[in-house]
Length: 127
Image (cartoon, rainbow, N blue to C red; front, side, top):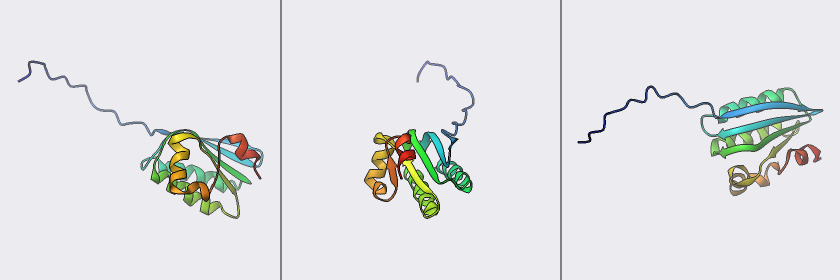
C-alpha cells in the first residue's frame, strides 16, 4: 500500500466548446473564420453558423478552416450538407491547408466535390 496521501483535485471543470466562428462581411461575400476543433460535439455549432450566414444570401460564402486543429468526419458531413444546400444559390468555398483539415478532405474525396482553397484571398478572388 502506498504511503502517499490521496489528493482530491476538486471538481472537474467541463471542457470549453473548443470551437469559435467569427463572421466577417466582405462586400457581397461572407467569411466565417473558424478556429478550434470540429468534432461530433462541435459540428452542430458549425452547421448553425453556416446556415445563419447562408440566410443572409451572400453571393459567396467562404468557410475559413485555416485555424482549425482537428476536423472529424462529423464536421466534414456538415460541410458537405451545407455545400449541397448552397448549390445554385451561393458560391460555397472552403479554405483548408495542412494535415488537420485539407488532408482528411483529400482522403475522403471532398476536394473533388467542393471548391477548396489554400488562402482566404484565393477563395474570395476565384470566380
